[in-house]
Image (cartoon, rainbow, N blue to C red):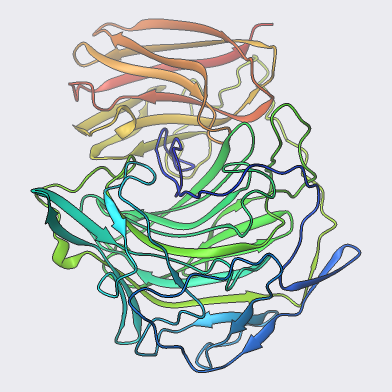
Length: 502
């Protein structure tokens, strides 16, 4: 969760999130250092320094983490942490003591508005982060200051205490429900200047959940110059939410691949990323995710993604609860990895880059194959394929243009090529809709800019042309955005084509 980012789960469209840091300027170093690893040839053999010393008693303003560059973390392993086949336990905290262990955690202070227009002050006070009944509680508190609403919360980090390179991170947590709450479990590099400040340094978001939609968990990486990101989502069903019970959020971070899990269910894998200095070649893969990172836990209030609290937000329940944090490592990691070749989807025999563009097949709209129908930020509705047409019925328009959305991703976009987008559209009554071709894994830039059209009651063919001026992308995405435009009239779309014209 850092600076400004444009959202969209490997599902959405344009979100804003991010973290933040005040690190020094960028570096031209080509390699990497591992604080707790011995590197021999292309194999990293993990040999952490471990202690099972008793938990230290915290103070209201804990001592800052050491700032020496040559420190060696002394990892603490909780005796109650279970083992996992194929892994060694690196460090863990089961939160069974009476006070926060400040040999593991820093309480980081930050002023309101530090990133993402968030409202909270992150404090070092135990009222905002404390242990209770074997769990860590990060609590957001609403008060008043100078006649205005004032919010405090906590951000805990393991920087310069429990940094590590590669491993399995597992965190069991329960999130608060309420407009404006934004809990996160995420990782940043120990030395943000090594490859350059964000996003060049890289960021791994293990979990983010919005308090107003606690059935969706997001897992994300941010990286690159130019900025890029990849994101997956895991949605609970049958009325269950991440605020109603504890769930385990995990990342398996290895050289050349990162995998995201919820309750041991794999839902997202990333293995294609990059970083570079301005005007320079890309750093050797798998940079920037080949350096020591540290873990962070925080509960933000408000900001550019979740929006601010409102009259429905109950601060009596503003608690982000963490049952355990466990970090494991394999005995060895092979770092001799190569960046995977981009695979570009082939056009159909008629030149159409859109699969099932004539809606001749009644496919699933939720499985991520070909067409996907998506709802966000208060959007409500449904879609069905019928008579070679897709019918989108809206019940609530939501708060964003992407609140009701039909998309198809995996479109090959080649630098220097020109493309034509055509489709037929009509509506139950005249209404507006936005169309674009976006870049979900390239910072959500637009290849075809967001274009608002007026959809008439009678069928009309719409045509747009654009030139691809960015680097080759195998994951362009055609979007029809039908939210937040003053109408919920049913829309009909047919004969969708995206084709190369030069």
